[in-house]
Image (cartoon, rainbow, N blue to C red; front, side):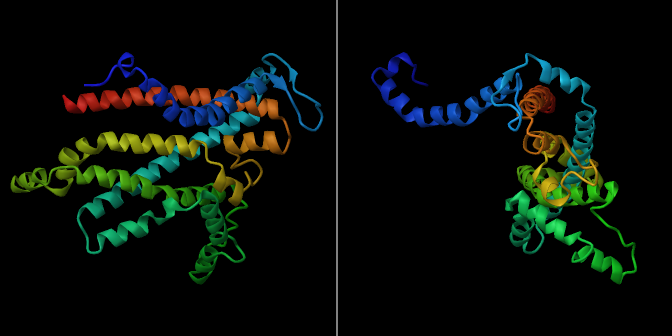
Length: 299
C-alpha cells in the first residue's frame, strides 16, 4: 500500500532534497532549451547580419509552408525512414529466429552481432564511407576483382542513398534483433512442442505461435527505428554531406545547414519546433495503436 503525500510529514523535505538534482537536470537541459527554441522561432535572427533577435511574429512558421527545399527534405527523410525500418525489422527478425534455435556459440554470435549497435554513429559513418570510397574502399575493390560495375557510390543519388541504408541497417538491425530475441525467449517452449506433436510445419509455427506473441515487440522496434531513422544526421553528415546535390539532404541535415551554414537560427528553430510537435503527435497515435494491439492480443 503506497504512502500518501500528506502522511510523509517532515519526510517531504528530504523527498525534495533527493529529487532536486533530477528536477534541475530536466529544467536546465530539457525544458529551458525547448522554451528558448520556441522563443527563437518567433524571431528573425541571423547571427551574421542581425545584432540581436528581432520579433517577427509567425513569419518563420509561415515560411515553412512555402519552403520547397524543406518539403523535399521531409520526403527524403520519410523515404529513408520507411525503407531503413523495413529492412532492419526483417533482418532483425531473421537473426532473432536464428538465435532462438540455440545454434553453437550463440552467446558469442550474439555479442559479435550486437557490436555495431554500441559504436558511435559518426564512427559507423566514417567506416562505411571508407568502405564505399572509390579510391581506397574495399567494396569497389571487390567489385573490380569480380569484374562488376564500377560505381562512384557517393556521386549519384541512388547509390548514395543505398550506402546510407546499408550503414544504418548494419548499425541498428542488431537492436531489433535484441528486442525480438528477448521476446522470443519469453514464449513457453511447451507451445512449440505441442505444435510439433500436432504436425505443425515451420511456417505454421511462425504464423500461429511466434508472430502473434511477438507482434507487440515488432511494433515497438518498428516505431523506435522509424522515428530515429527519420531524424538521421550523423551518418549523412559524414558520408554524403547531404549530396550529391540535395539528394540525401534529410530534414535534420536541412536544419543543420539553416542554422550553421546559412546562420538562420530563427528559421531553424521554427522548423525544429514544428518537427518535434508533429513527431510528438505521431508518437501519441503510435502508442495508442500499440496499446490497442496489445489489448486485442490479450482478449
